Length: 83
Image (cartoon, rainbow, N blue to C red; front, side, top):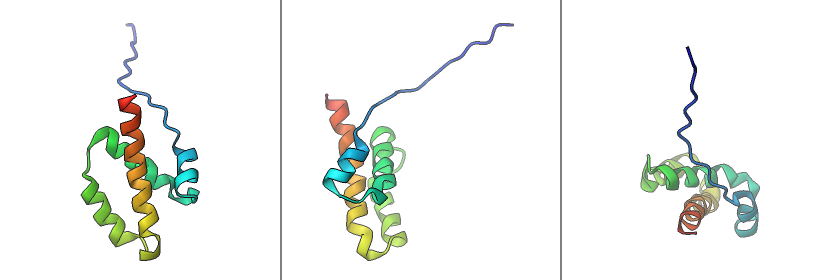
C-alpha cells in the first residue's frame, strides 16, 4: 500500500510584526492582528462579530488599539492579495 500526502494549503507571507510595531507601537496586540489576517483570508466570522466580542472582553482603555490591530491584519491580507 502506498501512502500519499495531500496538502491543501496556501502560504502567504505578511510583514505583520513589523507593521504592528510601526503603526501601533505595542506588540501585545499582535495576536489580534493575526486574528484580523485569518478573518481576511477565510471570512469564517464577520468583522462585526469579532468587534462585539472585543468590546465585551477587552478593557475600554485597550479597545481602540485592538480594533486598529484587527483592521491592520485584514488590510495586510488585502495588500498581499492585490500584489
